Image 1 (tube, rainbow, N blue to C red):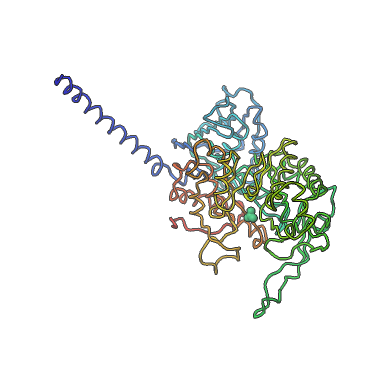
Image 2: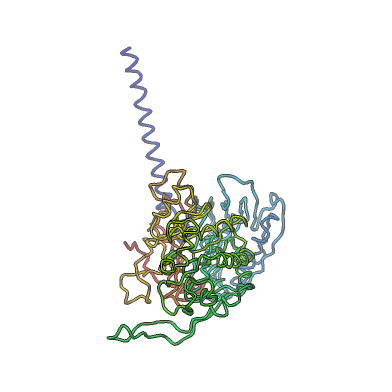
Length: 566
Ligand code: ACM
């Protein structure tokens, strides 16, 4: 007995020691792999891939390089060839090849079986001196593989204009990659300041470069309605123009308002929208249109006063920033009108998600209207919050009947959440937590980490005028979209997150670019890469190379120091 125990102890000690040694070695190798071994100039991939193993040598792209593609990936192959034709001057041949097993050179796009290891958007990429092999189960995966490949080439690959004397070499590597979140987005308010469609295309290019896949297009506001609706032309004839914009008050007399005296107009025709939606789809980006209701509707009620809760007065399109109290009335005819608008929206935007706003709906006009108070009673509702909820539900039922999913800002929780709604949590994360706990899908968009209209520095004197706040790049990078209080099952409802670009104080495309970058690069990594794979100093070292890509794309990014800022 005693002997047996001694023997057991005797045996156990060396086994434990071996285990300690093995664990220590594995940790050391893992730590070196994450923090030291990878040359951040050769492998400056943003967002950071799940697995990146450097290999010796490099591949050089030349005019004779052929892209051999599985038939399912031909569109992706042609897109790549077209994108690199401008800077390189090379017109790569693309060949359809159902089996690329016997092809031993060039760029090969291979379709493999779907698997959990690849998900819906994952890929494997092998670059060696003899060629490039992409393995993906979906076209999106193949697209992201080639986006990564572009980042292994010189930054000039992002130019539009041709450049000579560049050797288009990519360092050899093995990469296995897939995103952490399915919703990786950026929003653009094209209503406060209209953004021309040429810039919207560039916006989509910038998203695609960062493997972002949702473009949230904010199209209607108090200060302007920007989407052509054939059935209701006055929405743009009247609603797309404000005569002037408030810029301040007379010094010493805040009651005397000063306006810029400049009309601000613009809208997207339905042809423009179709063009943008197709351009985005080519880059695996789903466009999520936002049509605000029942608040943020002053431009709409100015065009069609019968929609208004104060039809006795026409306020005109709002000429100052802030939230208007003009709100849609809850008449059946208004619900029908907005559903007519959505019918045209559905025809234009094939994606699954339609955003109906729902935020900051000031209820004063509903409170003060005897007719609307009677309507609340007739509908058997308790108060104005329930009326807002009822309004949103009419849209939810309509969109669900048409096979789509309603998205709304987190105010749609107040007064009861519509059955099939997805919640966009902007007033912090609490709305998202409540929605996920109630079994609803959530997109995180908290002001604290994703409002890119906030200042990038505390020294406001060196920054363009902004709406307020302070959101530096390192805070964006640290964003964790899944709150710790959610169970694993609840956390599955967090689809992802997105950046917000509200344009009250962001007047031009160049101003948008300044507010976007470098923060969008940080957010892209926060949404693609697992928290354990994120490392801010390492990210900054890759940003040194990435900065040259932003320059090649003529992006007006905010200059940053390649040091740890916090
Ligand atoms: C919002 O910022 N009003 C969604």
